Length: 156
Image 1 (tube, rainbow, N blue to C red):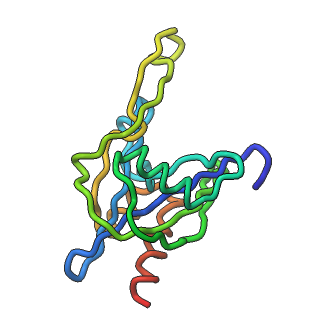
Image 2: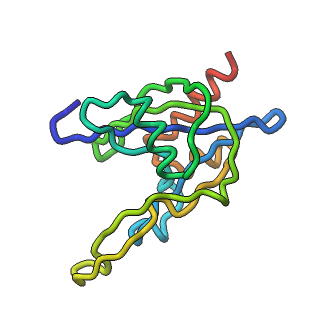
């Protein structure tokens, strides 16, 4: 890992709906992301603690961001590197959950900027199920290949 560059691990949950596959992705919370849509969404992910196993981190972060644990096995999807240099180690899991019932952890930041006031925001403000093409359009561009990786292993 390059010095100063962060590494995150995350889970891309998918479900089969007849012949189609849908993907659960999350929209980041907070004022910066409030009006952003295409290219702003993400897999449920978070930073690895020093020396932490990526799969353990991915499971922890999924539960923190969505309020639901991942049951069952994870399939490694490899990693992607975002424009910022952040590396994301991704896993896939098949499952289903009610996206409207997710409960995210929160973070605190100064808002409005330079106001001296601290406000609390959810780490993700929503999660939704999308077909492959819609999910690829909504995901951070560096993460969109993860959709194709899931579809590739499902077709094998």
